[in-house]
Amino acid sequence: MPELERFLPRYAAEPPHETAPYGRWAESLAAAFLQAVELIEPDPDEPSEKDGIGEAGELSWYPDRTWHGRTFAPVTTRTSTGLEAYGFVRFVPADEDEGAETGEPRHLTGEAQVTDELAENNPDWRIDLCETVVGSWRGDGETAAMTLVWGRPLVNGAAHALAELDGTVVDRCAVRDGRFTLLAPDDYFGDTLEVVLVDAGGGELARESLYEDEDAGDEA
Image 1 (cartoon, rainbow, N blue to C red):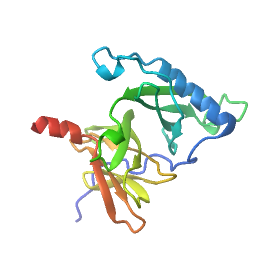
Image 2: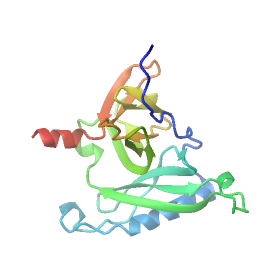
Image 3: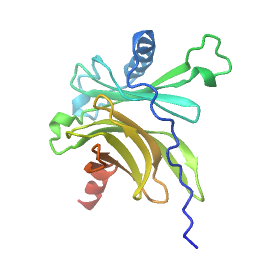
Image 4: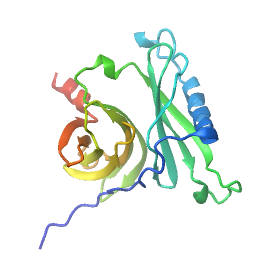
């Protein structure tokens, strides 16, 4: 009798519906995210934030993903003080909101963080990644952290981004306009996510662990 596979949420999120918003909808999403950026308090212990967060520049949107009745639209932007603000706008799709009368998405909520870790200052990076936990999934004795991961390849030829957990592919997203978004279980039974870029033929181009820097620090 073959070994039974453990419970694992694979491809839990809907595939992307849009690569990037436009028109009035883009303005609504931008307003929600920029409001969240304005609420970020500079860290006095971080030299890079001594001049404040600064003003947000042009927004770069990533493919949306829908899970658990909510759609997540990730975004990044550079600020006037040389930082990168990143986060997402979460909303309820119109067909999921029983109280919606306009036929438009409702309950837009932005979340934002800031970092001074930039791709151009890290020439060894092969993938530029952002991630945040957006929920949980209770499995067989353990709980997985459902994690939104978005980014862009820093290598040529990437066609798809894969999320792998202990060698099992748990999510996939086509690279669209040089960007991708994944939503997958992480930190489950001690296993952690890796993001893998593959070309059109399925050949691996790059691999990045969400915990690589922490592991290196522990070894040091």
